[in-house]
Image (cartoon, rainbow over all chains, first blue to last red):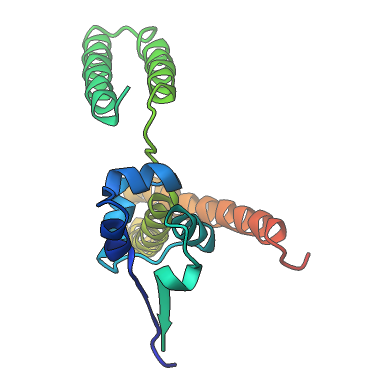
Length: 70
Length: 130
């Protein structure tokens, strides 16, 4: 089975949004700061619900935040 | 209340509870530990309600799920191995080990039963066939 990976641009998007802090993003999407850190490091893949919340927090589409690579 | 303050208060409550239970055990007083544990639980729940930050999220649940699976497998394999060994030793002339072997064997049976019931419940809840 080929390995797949989900990358994200959360760190880039945070900086593009007035250097939004991890704490602020976490509070906007309703998760812990540790989860944002894990997402940015690529150590955790979010649920679809959290992915949508993050995309909405940056006012972009899901695929502008998350990229699926096979 | 911030999560940091909550953690500090939680530590204080746990320390006080530990002192109370130890004191009660040392003095042979059986009436203090149970109300103390109940009171501490209620106090911690009230404190937790006051925390504005998110303490638990999907990542925490994911970690807890994986940790439970590992704990389940380790305990299962360990209890079966040690339990059967103790039962065998019990039959081979060390009868004191038999009750421990039975306790371990029955506890793993109970754990598997509870797991099966919980699995069946969540399977139905999340759309599995009945």
